[in-house]
Image (tube, rainbow, N blue to C red; front, side, top):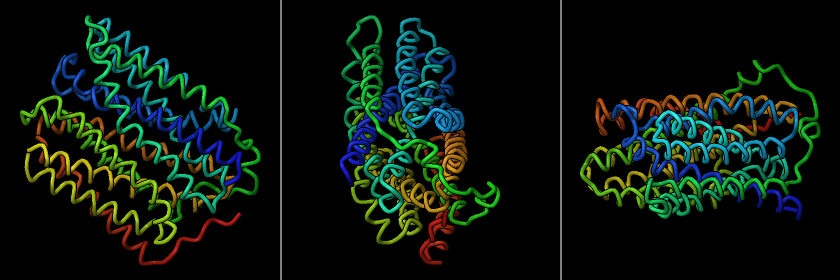
Length: 394
């Protein structure tokens, strides 16, 4: 990479780390706070679900806004939303308002809806030949979130004696503000340049088997991950494990999500995206097997690490495969459709997590993932046997 490319990718990666630290912090403590504030136990994970819904809802307007004002300006808008979201959550905690707390998490998810385009911006500044590497580097920055996010939740827990976790959400606001400063220094290509060339009708693009596989595989992998991750803190507490055991499990889960990104790009270059996605679905199925085999700390820890690994291979593989299916003039439309479908289904999975756990328990929640994981595994195996996927010609 050239100097300006490295600078842009570094800023995007650092901003990704800060955004995901904010998200992971809420994942780690949002359900616990929700259980204390919610009027009904089944609504305990509603703040987390609202965060995922926010990602899905923001994905379309974020893409349209960036098409009009550019990536950089769109990313800055997203970071501002992140600051507002954290401050709204602080207000909610002070007022004891569960509705405001849910609203704050919805806005935090909207921030992620903008930030999810960081990985695509990295491809635009480095070029298609470096796509898998650029995506992996940006996603790999999430390894910081594995430690910073949960620790912020713990460090800020008792900063203010009148309300637990108030300091955590103030620290979360600071993360978004630092990201805002980093994103201000981006030097990205103009949208008109990035979209040069002729575009095909959207229906023709969507009929490509590779594009269908990329969206379906990423959706299934992400939905399985978010459903299990959302319910894990409640399941651990429900099994009688101490609250202090939740943080290390979430931390190592996030390590599993992002640490492989340092070599996932090279694996995709060598073996192809469908083969790596195939491995991801196998790992997610192994997660289910371990999760339902017992309720001890090590069961949760090992299952959640595999859950993260499986997500990494399925999601990065799916994203890389997606970049091979569109021409430059088609990228924003295809990315918009991809983000809306993937995170729409992820939102449904997240909304279902609390209800499934409350009414059917941890075992059936995990077993509910199996049919789609098997279907995704078969689809990825079929595509892997069909040979390399040719990039869309301009």
